[in-house]
Structure formats: C-alpha cells, structure tokens
Image (cartoon, one colour):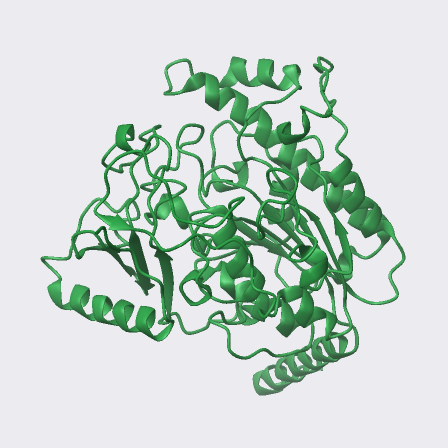
Length: 482
C-alpha cells in the first residue's frame, strides 16, 4: 500500500515530536552526570583534531569525534585565576573584580619598568558570597568533586596551596583533592625517573583520584571537575621516548624548536590523562548519561606554541590570548562529529550546567548554550566582554617585546585593556591612551587590519557599549600614576 506524500510528512512530524518528548522526559527524570576537564594554557590551535600538523592528541580527538567542537569558544580572561573565577561563577571578571592572578599577599603589582597607569589592587580570594557552579548543582541534588588546580585563593603553605577558608571545600565541593600529580610542580618533593620505554607514562596520582571517583557507584548524579596543571610551565617531561619521537618529526627550521619539541611531548601527556579519565567513565557504565566538557582556561604560552593564525597569546586580549579549544560530548543529545561556530565563553558554563541539571540561574552574565549543544540555531547578536586592567609581565616588563603580533615566540608587553565581541566584530580598548582597535573576525581572524578609522560608526557603537557595560558592572579601572 502506498501512502500519499502528505501522510509521510505527518508521520515524520509525529515521530519527531515523540522522540523530542521522550528525550525531554529522560532529561527531566534522569539528569546527566557532568565531567568538566579544564586544561591549563592549551592553545586554540594545539589539537590534532583542530588541524595541528604534528601534535598527537588521539584521546581528545576521540572526544571530538563523539561530540561537538567549538571553533569560536573563548576563555573569560587571558590569564589563569581570573578565567577560573569567571567560569566558576558565571560572571565576567569585570563584575567580579577578579581580573588577574592570586598572590601570597595583598597589595599592588610590582612592575619592572615605568608604566603610565596603576593597576587595581590585587584580588586574592574568590569571595565566599559568590555562588559557585558546585553550590548551584549541590542545590539540585548533585554530588560535587574537585581535583587539581584551584588557583582561586591566596597561596596557602606554598605556591598554589589551597586555603582552608577559600578552597574548593569552602566553595561547594563535597569531595576536594589537592594534588599536583606528576606535573613538574611536584618534582621537588617527588623526583621522577626518565622513561625510555615507548607508551609508558609517569604515574599521576591526581588523575588516579579522578578515575577512582568516576568508577565509584554514585547514588546521585555527579559534577566532577578535573582541573589539570598541564600544559602550564615548567614544560618538562620524564618521557624521553616522546621527546625523541617529536624530535624526529618536528621540522628543523621552526622557531623555538627545542621548547616546541618538549611541549609536544608535554601535550601528549595531557592527552594520555584525558584518555584515562574517559576510559574510567566508560568502564563505570555511566558514559551514556554523562555530559563531558573539555576546555582550556586561556590561550597558549608564546614561547612554546604557535597560536597562528590568531594574533597574540596568553596574557593579552587578541584572539590568541582568549580563543581556546572546547569540546562537548553527551551521547544521544549532541551529534557526533559536529561543530559549532557560535561564539561561547567560559562564563556560559555555569548556566549551561545548571540548565542540563534541570535548574535555572539568575544574576549571571553567561547564558545557557544547551540549545547550541543540540544543534539548534540561536541568536548570535549578544556581546561577549573581557576586562584586563593590569600589566604583564611583572618581571621583565621593560625588556619584553613592545608589540604583539602573530607567532612572535616572545613574551610581549600587555597593557591595561578591555574588549567586546558582537557578531563578527571585535573592539579592543587600550586604557593608557584611550585608543581602540576594531577587527572583522570573519574576514580577518588574525586581527591584522584595524577598521576603527574606516568603520568609525561601528567602532563608536561598540566603544559606547563597552563603556556602559563596564560602568554597569562597577569594573575596576587602571588609574594614572601619581
């Protein structure tokens, strides 16, 4: 029997509505686990799945093959603590007043060299009054766990030490494991031996803890944050077999070759750790009901990576400093091998996680990107904002490169600046001389052609918006040196 075309059309609609209803019912009754893996200083162009010519990242590539890659994902800040504070709260660094890195004591930046402006006082701790993603999810019945790098409190008992009053346990995490793992930060206390055998890696206690947690029987859905110290400096590896491998494949004539050989080996270690976590999740039987998000906290270090085709690097607001790799996998919810060019930012994660957990959140700057995860078309005309009223580097500023280009392979002078992206256009405002630069990221992702003069109306519009947003957020500003 043949059905008329209209019948097939109606049948398709009914099937689609039924599937959507069933999917919604599953979400409502069975909220997913959430595993958030945060890398440190991983560049936007670092991964093999993003086209890097010699880096080997098979486990992260597998995650991308099973989920969605974001080509326009952004960190909330070009530097560690500020970025983490923002994603932890869903608020911009401007609103938080947390725009730089934590220190061991209060005060002001001490810069080697003369500067025109004085940066705001250092922020040492994420305020307890702020509601973190862990606190929101705990309120929705989730178990919460944190492993690795916190960097949101005044250094306690040594560099990066957790504070008993402002560490993860005080910010909503039921399980909190402070551990450097096998990262070179731990080598003074736990020296590692050279590893020559191919395929062998140093044991990593931090990753072990994550895997044990993922493998446990959970009575409630969990939110686990695995905050890696990789690929942050010092870039050193005991895996001589990896160094030897990359020494054979990396071109001889590239800039900073020695550092980049070491970095390639270091990055593959991060990939190995990600693979172990994903394997543990698979073995637990919970992978099909777990949203996994992988992201970096800021752009790549200029002495170790090529951020090309993007301009800039970690520490500044050009694309190389804030655009980062991001991947999301959620079986049955996110299409495999999919890609989104929707601009998203770190402070979107809290409202997204709360949304998929069945809740809602107010008074944050981020928005839920759950619809994007499902492949839906959403409005792309909102503005993303960054605010960095500091100088960098503190030590060596006077001798750092004065300009910022593409693949300088040197640390450059970063001066107080803020940025706004709306649609295809991005405006950067430089506080020292009240100057702006405007770029069309669609045609000029490397930010090589400043349009502030030729497209003055667009520049003025974005400049006014940026100024009003910063004012409404009570943003702290760098002020003239007296």
